[in-house]
Length: 302
Ligand code: HMG
Ligand code: MG
Image 1 (cartoon, rainbow, N blue to C red):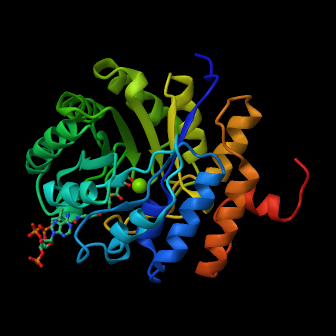
Image 2 (image 1 turned 45 degrees about the vertical axis):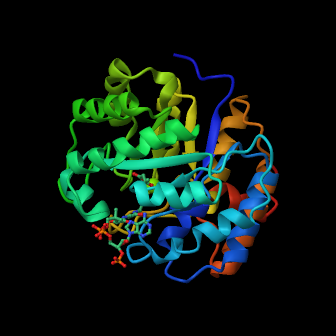
Image 3 (image 1 turned 180 degrees about the horizontal axis):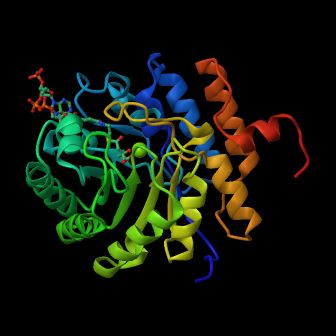
């Protein structure tokens, strides 16, 4: 199968990236980062998480961040909500896109949200109903689709079943997360093909972490199987507080370099994303976890 003409890049750095940082990132830095990413033309930027501040302290100021960002028309600013309380907090500050998140592994579900998979789906049903009533779009995440830090192998049939449940609940699209970054291209291909039997591939996005350096290859394989939505994180920020050892997400700079090299349109300016990456990495006091960002910084001509 051929690669697509265009891909929607969902930037998750300000949420998936920063949620894992030990250093408290100030509200104004988060706002500036999101505005730089929006200025680069990214169509969707995950702006925060309305989760329990006891569980993820770094996201405690998501309401302030959301209220302060200058919203660009045409840019979406999804936020994570774990329950109705989170949805109501998000709605109160004017969020128009929310993301719910379930896991394919029971153990990870408990570590991440303190409930079973079935209980998490019960929590999400009223969130989806309230979002639909309010005209708010819902994205569904599934974690651990290619492996779990506690349970190991994951059955692609189970991923398909849960993805179909989230769509039936009202999710417009499903982001399939290799939360710990253990997948390889053949495994990713088998998983996507299996899920696409139960959910239209147009509704599927992929979310790879780069623990073993496979995130770009895994994303490409899924694009060749018909996926048109890819998540990435500026400067490769990220990890997961409940997945010890997991590395950052696929770096947005690396994804854009590959996509543009393949002639795939994104509408995103790579140099401006790299500038946003340098901005946040200077603040965090370390270099970007992106080969492309590093090469651009050394002014290597591509
Ligand atoms: P719990 O402790 O079982 O829930 O947490 P609870 O209902 O007993 O609430 C505990 C306290 O939190 C209470 O406060 C609640 O009011 C409060 P207290 O009475 O003790 O003062 N609370 C809230 N506060 C603000 N906003 C809320 C909220 N809900 C409850 N929405 C809960 C259950 C789900 C809340 C908790 O486990 C939680 O917040 N988990 C979120 C964990 C998280 O954010 N993980 C990272 C994101 S997932 C991820 O990164 C994977 C992904 O990137 C994809 C991939 O890579 O695979 C998406
Ligand atoms: Mg993630």
